Length: 167
Ligand code: MN
Image 1 (cartoon, rainbow, N blue to C red):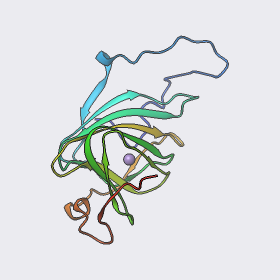
Image 2: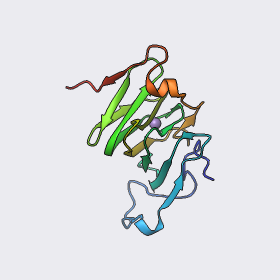
Image 3: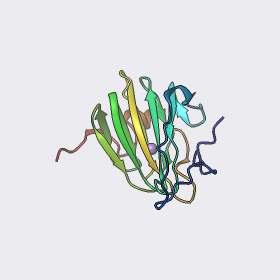
Image 4: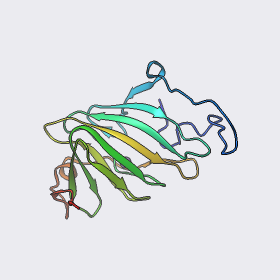
């Protein structure tokens, strides 16, 4: 199983430097690693697909993540932040003290570094996310405890379901 607390490929992959002239790299669809989100880090049915690793000049990784209804991540932080692009469906994301945000296909969400949060599908619809996650000191995510049903449904503490603010 992947150790998701570590940067996926901070190994010897990607020795690109700014001054080198190199070929482009194709991460072929037929070589993609796709796996089920482990139950100690996710609730419900989650599929993860790793798209690309960080390299020396592009210090972020890409992944595609599909959540079935009610499925979500555990609480976690990203030491260098994360962009979430909703590629299909309807979902939600929450932070410790903020409202739960409803998110839908086409929305782009920035989660700042070290902000405890979770993300997942809505109770009655699936959601897919393209995740662009920054890397800091070879880590891109640190998981914490799982999200309770009360937290997911916005029935605990100050959290309640709200809308993304419009600009
Ligand atoms: Mn996240």
